[in-house]
Length: 316
Ligand code: 5RP
Image: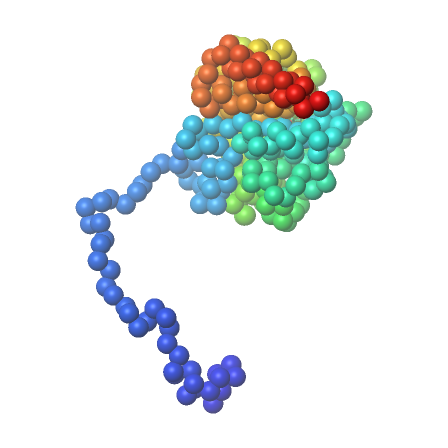
């Protein structure tokens, strides 16, 4: 009788390569207890392996922090200054970021697939600067998130906004879809023009996002009470850079935020609108990962900027 086209007699003569030299295991390390380490990120201990592994690509396990580069602004404000040509101005910066926050359109059209950095995919949208900003929908199917090999999904949540409820519903849908596939969700606390960016409001927004299942949250830094916001948020908090500041001020903000419990930054304009974006993202890294004082990081920025200028002038 045939077995998938091979006769039994012939099949019996097969030997598995490992079966002819089976040896009993010898070293069971009986005195060494099995590892029961806690996961390095706040709030992540009960997550599944895939979810943890993706988060450990975004956050550096050695420092517990991340420098994410946010370049998704075009999803509602079109060709933003500094992002007119993502292929030219952003791609060279990716090497210095821990993760890239971007839309699927910009990713597929402008970023080479050879990059090894994790992608945090912007997954809500549906409005423009001409209309009510909080009116968003889930703008990417989870299948496409998997196809793109994203390490996390980003959702805008507008607490106190006209479409607060719908934006929380978007978060819930994305968290549920992500949980099915082991893909974490970043909740981005969108702030309407009329909202005060104080610790009370931002603390409300970040806590709601975490309670609804976000695995990490992005918000704004505020001068007073930021440490209470991070303490009361059970998952890692990243800060957005906000509008362009003088470089030293932006570095100071990153320093204070991480000093007061933030797990890093998800910075856009304060990097790509800089005169020397590559120097700036490296200076931000020095603050976030190496705990460099802002003044030192600023000197570092200036020296990298000068080196780059010299390199250009010798070439021309
Ligand atoms: C848009 C975003 C942006 O990615 C974000 O605000 C970060 O960029 P910036 O540092 O320029 O504020 O989430 O809503």
